Amino acid sequence: MAIVYQKKSIILILCLFLFSFFGLQKADAEIIKDIDYGFSLDIPEGYTLEEQSSDGNSLLFSHPNIPVTFVIKISNEKSVETSQVLQTSLKKLSAEYDTDKIIWSEQNCAISSFKMNLDQDYEGWAVSVPLKIPYSFLTLLCYAPEYLNGGAQQFIISTLNSLSLDYVESNNFSGIFTEYAFPKEGKKQISLEIAGQNINTSIDSADLSASQFIVDLEFAVLSLYANHKLWKEAWQRYYRMIYKDCTPRIKQVSKDIFNKLYPVAEKKDSKNADIVFAQYLLSWVQTFEYKREQTKNSSDFTPIPHVLCGEGNDCDSRSMLVSAILNLCGYDTIMLVSREYSHAVAATCIEAPGQKYHLKENDKDYIFGETIEKITWGMIAQNHSDRTKWIPIIFGN
Image 1 (cartoon, helix red, strand yellow):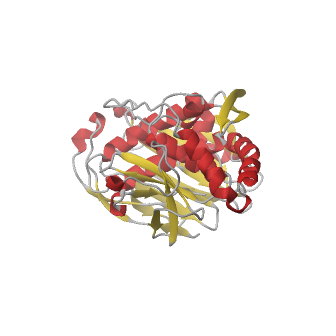
Image 2 (cartoon, one colour):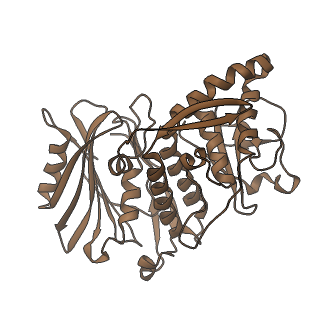
Image 3 (cartoon, helix red, strand yellow):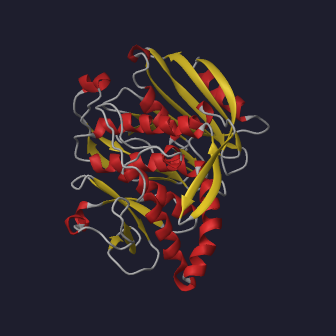
C-alpha cells in the first residue's frame, strides 16, 4: 500500500454554533492518495490519524474539535458484491443499517446510513467501492455521536464525497454522495449565444438542485475555518470541491461549445486559434448579469449549472465556468482568488502576450483572464496586480 500524506499543522477556530463549545486545539490534516489501489481523498482540514493496522490497510482518524471519526479500510474479497463488503463491515460493529446499491464512477458501489453503540450511541454514513487491484475494495465509515442530532452531517458528507477513483479513465465524476442523493432526471435543454453563435446544448435537470446542495454543503464546512491561520487551504478546498462536482455536469456543454466555436476561431486566426477561442469564452461571461448575494449562513457563489441557465453571478462563478470549460477542452487552466481584492479571475496556460501569474507548483505561467471588466486575456487592473495577494486554485485536470 502506498498512501501518501501531506501533513499540515493547523489551529481550528470553530464558528458554527453547533461546535463552538469544543474550543481551540492543534491537529494534523491529511490529503490522502493511494497510488497502488487508485483512489484519493480530499478530506476537510483537522483530521488526525489515531490508529493504523500493521498491514496499513485500516486507518482510523479522529477530529480534535468536532466529534467525528473517519475510518478507511481496504479489504480483499473474492466472489462478493460491493454491498456485501459494506454489510460485512457494519455487521462487525453490530450496527443497524440501510444499504443501497449505486453505480458511481462506472463501478458497482454501495452506500449505507447506520447507527451503532460503542462507548456511546453513534450515527453516520458508510460507502464501499471496488478498487484498481482485482478483488480489492475500499470501505469508508464516518460517524459522530448521536446526541449531536445530525449536527455533524455536513462534515461527514463532505468527507465521504471527497473520494475519487483515480484509476477510472475519465476520472471525472461528481461525488458518490451527490450521485446517490440526486440521481439523473433527464436532459434540460439550454441555448447559449457566444461570439454571435447560437449553441444548443443540455445539462441534466437534477444538476440544478445537486450543484446548489454542494455549494451549501461546502460553504458550511468552509465556515469552520473563517478565522484561523490556514483559512487559505480551506478556501482552496472549497473551490476544488465545487469544481469536482460541476465539471461532469457540463461535459456536454463544453463539448458543444468547443465544436461550435473552435472552427470559428480557426477561421479568424488559424495560428492563434486557442487564445481566440479562450477570448470568446471570456468575452461571453463578461456580459453576464452581476449579482452578489450572501447572508451570514450562505455562500454568494452561484452554482455553474445555474449560471448556464441565466441566473446572476459573481466573479468566482464566472472564473470557475471559464476554467472548467477550458480544462474540459484540454487547456491547462486554474482560478486565482484574492481575499484582499475580494475578487477572482481565470488564468490559463495558453501562450499569449500579457500579464501572467507564475505557478510555483509546476513552474508554468498562466495568463490572467478578468471576468468582470470587458478586457482581453493578459490585462489586469493596476490595483489588482500584486501577485502575492492572489491564491491559486489548482484543479485535478
